[in-house]
Image (tube, rainbow, N blue to C red; front, side, top):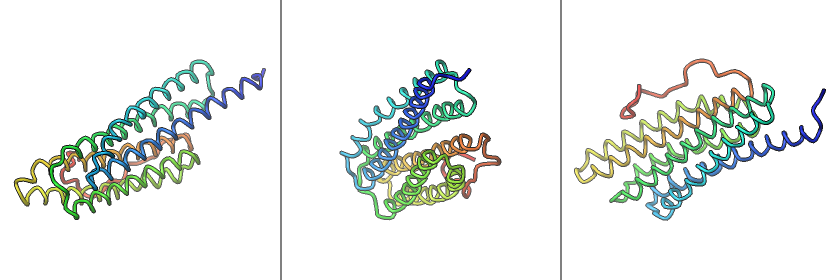
Length: 235
């Protein structure tokens, strides 16, 4: 016997609401990353403070999404395809929460910087950050369209982010070596660059989940990586 139409409609509305909250959370992360990078490259402490304050909003989205997923699974007992929707939403919200945390960490470092950054460092930071921002936007678009090809493009683009990160690391190391007084700021910048790279990694995690959502299977093979890391602490 089929479910009553109003029950189906209610379930579909709950699922639509869940998807909408994922997009809202993702958009909040996009905004946080953009403000965090603008804060550090223009030394805008107001933007940095705003990112730190707004992180609570991103955390609340994660809690809300977790509650929605639990309710959907427990009360509606969804079929396999809908289970993909709910489990993917849960995993995505976890990665998005980490992106928000990393943007907040970048902003905290910004407030500790003593000197205005030289143009070559600003340019290098902007290059890698712009790349990550584009990846994040493409990932959210892929989720909206349930597009496996778009998710694959993000997944493959992680290699370019690695290369841009390594170039930025080289610039920071050069800055560290130039003068002893650059030591404190240079150390903060190493962490900032690493945080941007980690945002790229979490964005790629989300893309992998979207591929699974669209295709019902996981991407095969190792994630594309860039040239040998310099100071990433990874192999």
